[in-house]
Length: 111
Length: 114
Image: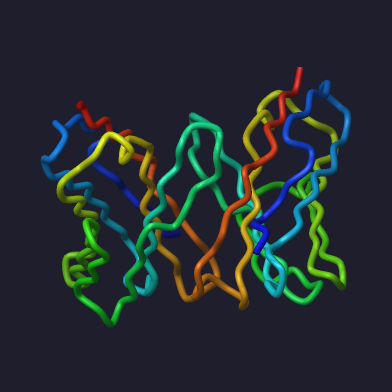
């Protein structure tokens, strides 16, 4: 089945710096790649997603890139703020039948 | 628009008991998916319901079951609870079937099995 690996598991950056989280997947049939942010005591919240027919997508300070050949996708957060501190999960969907998540990255933004 | 709601928020059970968790999706959403989140295994997909039918299923034993009602509300049941079932159970709703549309997660039900 699909495996999604996520790196790093923890990431600490200074406020204003950029943060990059990377994920790889194994099943070439994967076609939908969402990213979620989970704050303490809350459910995951979708922050951005990308489909396999698109290479890059941007929404204000957040961007996601997808390399289908290499089977990896990345989340980029620019101008980080303390409120960006949370656990971030990548995920990959295979043909709409299954959703596999990465293990998560705990991002800490230091003021 | 109200978000996804889950009840109860916290639950304590003992081994061997069964439990039923409830999820009310966002109004107009017809798909409800259930996930288990644990520190060791992370987020794992349990199953998805759409139009009262289970459409997709993850790799969990038959002790985990669910159903969906005509108003799209869903319940998840775990029978013969084991210690390892202690987890945060999340449900997510979306407009359409499958994982092609944005999923909105509820706050989860934290289950502790003693």
